Length: 71
Image 1 (cartoon, rainbow, N blue to C red):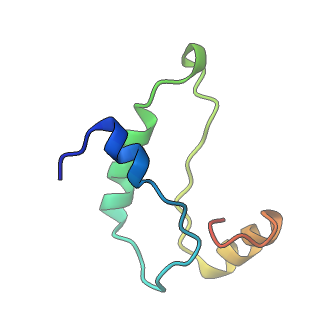
Image 2: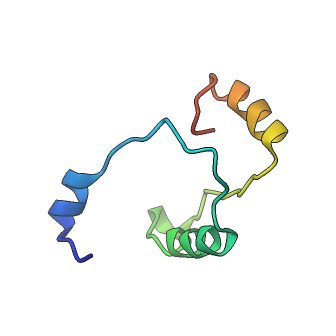
């Protein structure tokens, strides 16, 4: 699937309802590696990625994020 930048931006959606299905850990790792290659201000890299799979931890974090499903 090849898209122009404009098509990718127009296609982007915010999703807040998710399937109750685990993600492939290797695919998540690949996405995180790719995300870490994105440019940032002065190469400060002031972000951190966590791949959390424990349901109890996810629910606890959701509370800290105003109960958003995307926590």
